[in-house]
Amino acid sequence: MTKAEIRLVRALADKRGREEHGLFVAEGAKLVAELRASHLRVRRIFAREGLFAGPEVETVSPQEMERLSLLKTPSDAVALVEIPRRRLDPAALAGRLTLALDDVQNPGNMGTIIRLADWFGITDIVCSEATADCFNPKVVQATMGAILRVRVHYTDLARLLAEAPALGLPVYGTFLEGDDLYDAPLTAAGIVVMGNEGRGVTPAVARTVTRKLFIPPYPADRRGSESLNVAMAAGIVCAEFRRRTGR
Image (cartoon, rainbow, N blue to C red; front, side, top):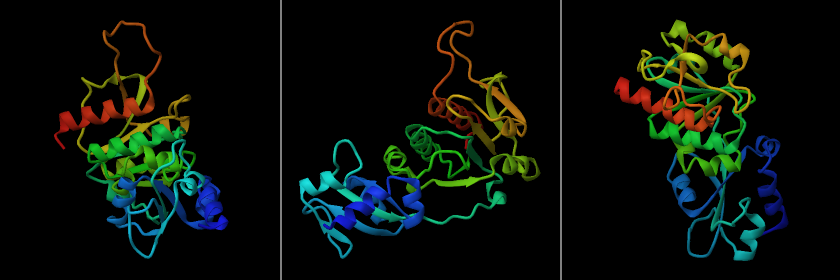
């Protein structure tokens, strides 16, 4: 393993480096094995002896893996994977449930939401340009492989959502002044907006929301936490949509 290879892996911890090289980092033998079997192109694999074989695989020592790994606890395999280039066609969202992330910043939240989308059969997530990069190493690890199955798109979110009614898609969002999630009418197809961890939904995006929802505490008059973590809220909302609409 060369110093240049170590520098390359380290450079991919930063978004600028990922954009420059067109690569992202994935760690752990299970995830790397999933990547090799997926539609994504794995450019290079650094792994402990006996884990993988092939022309793209380089066996490294435990000491070398410590220098390569971007995790607090070094993994047993590191893969460099080409970032897929995807084109968002708004018309393709018609007839389906889609998540929209409005400036969600925390990589752990981002990764968990991608994993939730995969669990609930949501194949596309549309994001504002300021939302956390889905190929950030922390996000990739938090998805537990879901990044292979969920397409994440970055766009002018307010503009996209403004076009949703023309596609027959209501735009849902969670607000304190919204209707009770468990009583409000829900449709099988639509776009569900989740806002920033601290500021919530931005004003421009809020203006596109056609149906405001509220996740009530229990009991209703209880004074507890001020809000829910955005990933928790996304899980609750997605579960209720799937429970009631049946698909």
